[in-house]
Length: 316
Image 1: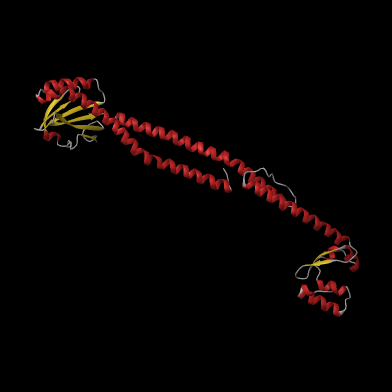
Image 2 (image 1 turned 180 degrees about the vertical axis):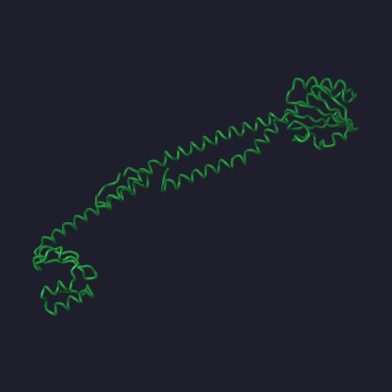
C-alpha cells in the first residue's frame, strides 16, 4: 500500500498492535477463568448452604429418606446441579440425582478428593458429564459428619469462556482495523507532503526553480523552508552565471575554456574569429594545437606550461 518511511512506521505499528492483541488473552484469560470458576463455585456454595440448612438434623438422625426426597425435589428445579454425593465418616456413600439414588461403599468412590479445608472446587470431567465438582465438609454444630460433593453442569462455565473469546475477538478486530485506519489517515498528509517535496526537488534538479509549500507538519515545514531558501540562492547564482556567460560570449576578448586534460570545452565568438574556425570545430581541440595557431613567443609558451603545472603561479 505504501513505500518508504510511511511503510516503515505503519507496519511496525501494526506489528506492535498485533503483539498486544496476542499478549492480552495470555494475561487476562487465566483471570477470567478464575472468575468464571468462582461463579460456578458460588452456585455450589448456595446449593450446599440451603441443602444442609434443611437436612442437617435428618443427617444427624441418619434419616436418609428425608434427605433423598428433599435433594431430589431441589434437583428437579435446578438444571445446573447434576447429582449430589453424601459421604459419611463411617464410609457410607449416597449418590442422588433428580430421578434416582443409590447407596455405595467408599471404595466405589475412591477417586473423591478429601476435603482438607472447608470447601473445594475442581474439574471432574473424567468422572461424570459435569465440568466441576464443588465439595464441602458437612458440619453439624462442631461435629464433622462427613463431606458433600455437588456435580455442577459445566455449560455455564463454557458459555462464559465463549463469551470471553467472542468479546475478545470483536474488540481485537475493532482495535486492529481502527488502529490501521487511524494510522493510515494520520500518515496520509505526511506522505503527501513528502511526495510534494520530492517532486519539487526533482524539478530543481532539472533546472526548474519550483517552490515547496511551507505549511506542512512540523519538521516537514522546516525542510520545505530550507529547500525554498536553497532554491532562491541557487536561482540567484544561476542568474549570475548566465550573466557572466553572456559577458564571456559577447566580449571582444578571445576566451576559451579547457578541461584538466587540455581539451577545449568552450570558445566565445571572439576566439572563433581570431582562429578563423567555428565553435564546433574548436570543441575537443588540444590546447597545444590552439596555442600553436596563436604564434606565441617561446617564453610565453613556457609561462603557459608552468601555469598549467601550477595554476596559482600563472601570470601570463
